[in-house]
Structures are given as structure tokens and as C-alpha cells.
Image (cartoon, rainbow, N blue to C red; front, side):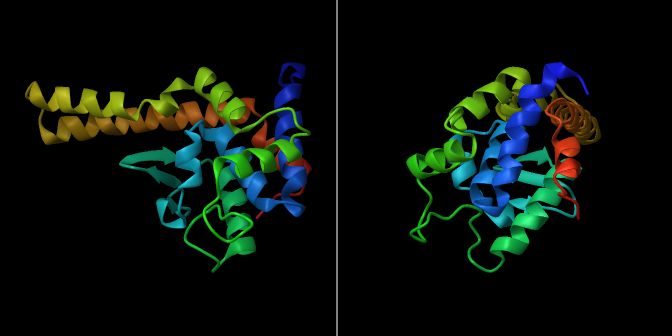
Length: 188
């Protein structure tokens, strides 16, 4: 394993080690690190936004690809919280999970070193395409306005989606998510 990724293995490992203590913080922290979505998007996520069979997380009209390790993680989390709420993340009081509580819970698992915004910022810098849904939608609109057929627009959208999947898989590989999950016994 490349020692340049020790920090990633440590962060991912600390989050996974916390699953038995606080599964919500584990999943929230890993989604922040793995997908770089804004805190509010994470906190508002619902199970109905996820298609674990197809490996897709719908954020608005954007389909973010779920890699195999994240499908395994979400399946395990689903078993832990099944039937409690359609919301992925519910506060300790049973209501909406607020940003302050979310940050505190993730920081606790990460030994006070990183909060959600830190994890999101790291990912957004490394993989800015995760936050470029509006740019992709605008390019597709422009392409259609320039006279592209519906089939051509769909082909460009498939190309964008394929590129995004490759980038996400590369990011998750660099973060050593699968390797650390296997090491920690996170299998189906």
C-alpha cells in the first residue's frame, strides 16, 4: 500500500471503527469524504434518494454513482436503522439532525481532528466533478440548443456519467475505502 495514503486509511479506518459506537456518524463522515456534497445535502438525504441495486444516489436530478464499498456500507446501515425513518440521518432527539450535532458526532469519531466541512473540502479539491452537476446540465442544454438530436444528447450524458463513475471509483480507490473495509470486516 502506498504510504502517501496513510492519512486516508487512518480517516476511513477511524470512521469505520466507530460504526459500533455511532453508525450514523460513520456513514455521514464517509459520505462526506467519499462524495463531497454540501453538509445540507447530506443532512437532508433520504433512503428514497438511493438505489442500492443500481448503485446510484440521486442528489436532485444528478445521479451520483455508488461504488461497491459504499453500497455495502449503506446496506449495513440500512439494517441498523431499518424502519426508523426515510431520512438517513436523524438526530438523537428523533428530529432532524442539525449541523452542529452532525459535526460533533463525526469529530468525536475522528478524535477531534476533522469535521464534515473539512472532509467535504478535501474531496471537492481532489474531485471537483462531484460538485459540477449544474455545469453538466448546462453543457447538455447547450448541446441540445445547438441542434443535437435526443440520441446525441443522451450519448453525451452517458459519457459524462461514465466519466463521473470512473472519477468516483478512482477517488474511492485512492481513499483506500475498499481495502480498509475488508481489513475491518465490512463485507456483505
